[in-house]
Image 1 (tube, rainbow, N blue to C red):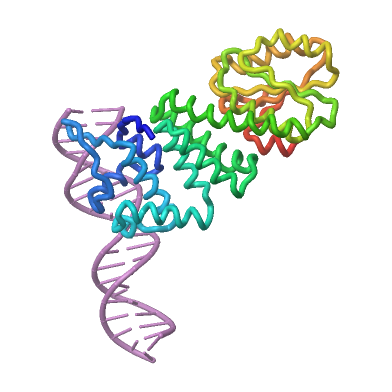
Image 2 (image 1 turned 90 degrees about the horizontal axis):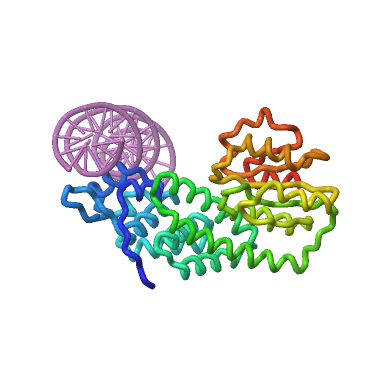
Length: 297
DNA sequence: ACAAGGATCAGATTTCCTTC
DNA sequence: GAAGGAAATCTGATCCTTGT
């Protein structure tokens, strides 16, 4: 495996492992858990082996092991204990750490072994809900704090997307739609983050709904082609980082799509948290999370 | 604005000691 | 040995100064 050299600041480690920077310093001082290089001006710089070790330590710490005890173990013993716990119970945290490492090191093999490991006792949907969703939330945070770069996000998100498509193709063979209502999924203009809506698409197919996905950056005016063909349509859209103002989007939707009747429009995504839903027309609904939507199906 | 590291503090936990 | 309490230690946070 080719490791890409990458250095992290103490803040990066805090973001990636959840351990406060100050606590990391204290642990280094008190227990010698890490020995980072220093810049000429004495600033700590960590490499990915440091990150790996601290992820393991953080994992053990979360499982009730005292730092004093962990610090007495050498690296191999730490690895062994992490594996032991992993074998016993919840792999989710361990998997989360593995996914982070896989992302940072562009390690597709690690991603696959982690995924296969999870699939041994979970369905694809369980993996997605229990591991991928928390992980994606995590990525959002790392992204906001400048710990990771777009290249990391693109790499790992695409690997996850590949898994969705794989299972989508699988369930399309068996899960035929049982209702007339057509769910139309699309992303607003200039919105490029499509993993959320692709997964929504997966869930709709999984639940035997009639759904089509129109891809990213769709001009609203194009939707009229569908309205001529279908009576009962429900639109779904997803705002992650789109620069489009959501209230403007809604006005446009009303103007261009709701000429003859008020079509239902379901909105998802991170960006909706900033929006006040009070003045939404009644046929437009906002969903804060996936389960809320799945329960309404 | 951020990083480093020293001093100190409170709360939790462990260890030690006495008593039964 | 079990129980209970005092003492010691561990742990992470806060506050602070210094330096880049």
